[in-house]
Image (cartoon, rainbow, N blue to C red):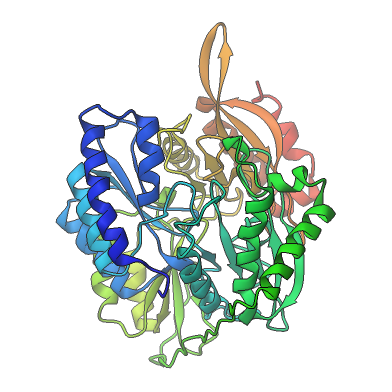
Length: 515
């Protein structure tokens, strides 16, 4: 971490502590405090009496050391709510003002950064979660994502940053970290190089990124990051905070071609400056051998390393039981070369397991989702988040309970994505079925609703933003999904096959629920 200013950041913690004390004394309102605290990776929760803290996990990589640190904090501070986020970080919730400060400082000592986890800063660099072990990958992009993360930390104190700067690396067309519609994305190619996409993003007025370069040598990625910053410095919107995101530059500059031209001009400036931004990275070889045993399970994935396996663990809503999280950390401490990888859909993958180890990890994570539908995605929700309109976690739990009670077979429903507000922290716009929190007056009274989105697709080459159909009462959504599941199951098909054969089927079924 060549760009990490640990000494300077530790000195700033005293200011954070002082401002936090003022907030709890009522001397600073929530809005003003949020603008300050985001720099440190923390926000006050909706109640105003507790905090969340975001632990950055570059490239979604939770090494055994990072896992053990997090488990130690959970035990020491009796943390009872954890969330795996869609940006591949770990959020700790319901923290007191003293514990959030102490954990933040201890995290720096452990090499875990919270600085820049919120606010107008580079966010956690994302990466395909199984990079390095996945059979179908083009190449291992994780080392390059980590180098990018190290470099971007140096922009924490840069001027004229966008409201968020999200960077992602994908290792195949599966495009799990959404590299083709991040602020800056590096999409792997079969030839070992990257195609580069810029100025994309979800949320209000979502846009796919503009392909600004093809066949880029991995060693040159930092030049492209620097050019992204310079482009925003020159053309970003600083007057309207709601439009202070890179995707709005596409419109401001007159379209994709004009944006591409502007970006490439800045890239040329970077190369011409003489600054050496070349970077080297090397994948860590997996030298571990299998134990001669094989294992098959719906949650087990055979790695490209013979005899080794990955176990998928998806706690409902991305919220693991703290005791199980800690028990898993204890178990992995004694397993060679294992680590946890976080996914943008809130799944955690435990990699480099022998057959016997995979069996033990399956037992330790028995609370995992069992079907694609149960692996649905939800932001933390309006009961916790200051800006959330609806409690997305409560809705997901109600839907899972209803589908289980109705005994809908696995495969009859897809993974759904739920966001409590338009910010799309639940990535509702790229789910096959997505919901976004809203409100609608009925008989003069506001009613809790969600906007339904359908047919989103995040696969590279087939990207599509979900189409908005209309609002559904929150209380009716579990019933809607049960009816959909029963309909699909009645045809003896899985959801994708049914939708392919009945392209209007979902819309027709939704009609009676749309307000």
